[in-house]
Length: 139
Image (cartoon, rainbow, N blue to C red):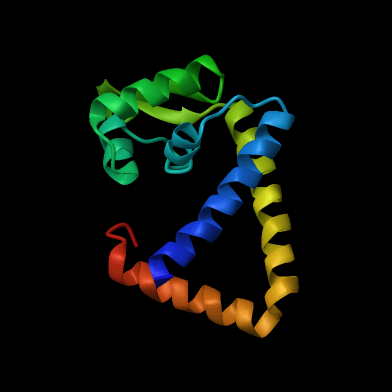
């Protein structure tokens, strides 16, 4: 298997674990909604920024945000820098969901570290961070 496929397999395994745990905790989220919500800045994000960061169309981002809003995960607020614009930010329920997801991610990472050993896990993280510098425009 090529390197990208190997990374994707691990990514999907993590994604499935988190989504399953979120459903069990009462959060009805899809993978696409989750990926978009992860990209919301602490101070809020404009829809166009979210679409760009999630690499989806503005229309797709709008549909995902609407679904997240119905689930109570996000809220739209006035942009303090531009009263005509709105920001999307995590609601209190959304922040709680993010904390829960973070706990699941940490648990899975501990399992992976136990399996790989701390040295190899550290080297893997370092390598992936370096690859991100090469490929992610938001670094």
